[in-house]
Image 1 (tube, one colour):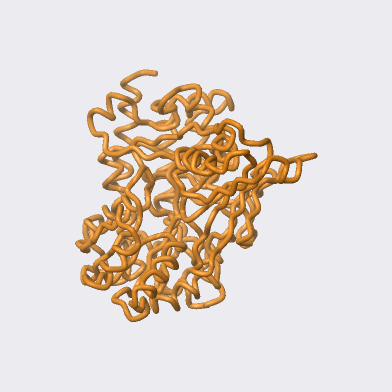
Image 2 (cartoon, rainbow, N blue to C red):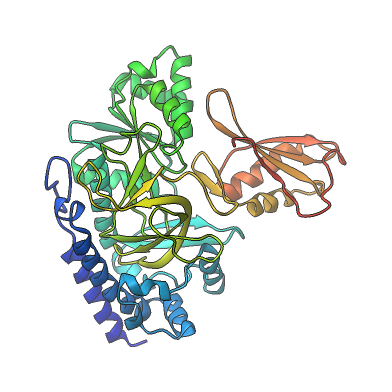
Length: 470
């Protein structure tokens, strides 16, 4: 690839990004951070998307080995993908294709546009999303990405009703996961104070809320329930606390009426939600607005269409479905220097509605939010893993029998739990299995050690995961 072509396409792409970064440093109105973009007509919205796609396709071709090889393999040139209408020519990209690339081109893969020279020059942060084989898919983001990321998240938080008079308590880990970091940088842009709660146990976090009176709590839905119960055990009523908003991410909540109701009643606070993924730039793609839960039985989630093109596809053939039909989410990311993506399969089921929202925003909304996955991905308290990762951990322990079970349930406090049932002659094996799973899946689980021959034998296709939450 020609260095001059690489530089030229990057320069044009960054100029296009900057052209449409409006109301970046302060809200443009009381209700919308970027009103020029958020209540734009759908025709003008399409114009923005088309201009960005026309700039990003040659940028990807010249700067990403993954995309160049894919263009060439499909017999396409960058000018063939120059508008939203052209996207259908580009087959959906899924996680397995990225993992194959990461395996063949360790350690980073070639699906991003961040090379070593650029990483040394203006690298910002690396995030990771594990695949079913345990091969990490890493995404290196630049300082330019940080700017666009914090701007997009500020727009989302502003839509949810957060203002400089608030203070936020972030009860989420600061590992290689995008959620907490994205919230923090948005708060910085919005001049909203925050209290970082990573590394604290639940007793300490309950004390922080009681003493320092934050107005917004950020965590997973499951943890919101757990923390509320811990407060009650300490004699502190979460419903009487200072918390007025609960921002959740990492697992479904707003689209599950009983879960949302349980959290909101426990805290006497409104639940709002982030939706996004590590692969398609680690900022918020979907978010709540003041009107998103006008109908208690059916919430909606906005998607930022000026920075991402969102589609729904049929799970069987990966072809687009019509507005009003249920399908899997696919994202074309148009808001990143390092990880713009064409038609990445995020893979959540929903239904789209293009009618203008009563809040004034014109961007597409996900009806019922996002509450189901197409694949066998396990989501436990915001930590995502595949059954094959669990199997790899179980089989790494010497002497464990051939059969095992994964049982997922919800306790009386509303916290999702995972229990692994294995066969072994030594009960002390439980800690070894738990340790292997912590190492591979970054989650704590319970382990039951049963005598050899206890579990039923698999005679056909194994179905080892029993999700009792459903």
